[in-house]
Amino acid sequence: MAKLSYYTQEGLDKLKDELSYLRTKGRADIAYQIAEARDKGDLSENAEYDAAKDAQGLLESKIAKLEELISNARLVDTTNMDPSKVSILSTVRVKNLKMNKEFTYTLVAEEEADLKLGKISIQSPIGKALTGKSVGDKVDAQAPAGIIPFEILEITR
Image (cartoon, rainbow, N blue to C red):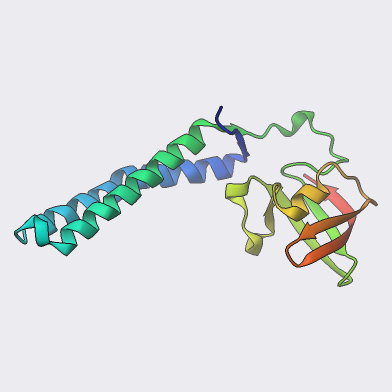
């Protein structure tokens, strides 16, 4: 059975846009590269042709992966979620008790994660530790750097 992934509308639209681009412009660019390389003569000793064919294989693989992701994607319905508990699409203000600093994270699907934008995967160690918790709860996230203690200060949607 395929793995379902949950996305925001923005995240799903981004995947669909990338797929559309790869199917049109990406394939056209690769076809042009193959044609150019083919025009250079003997294909058995043509490194450019081999490279273009390899690039075509990688492109088709990426297209197939995106098609599978999109076919198994579901939009997140926040209407039935408890706003007092951390879940996907929650924006959580936490205090790192080890560093005595505050951070704000929005929990998103793995493919939408972007730490620069404060979006972390719900599957990440911090995301897993925060999920299901409430304001005032203290949690320990098992990160690669060790255990990081957090206190949940605020949850918003």
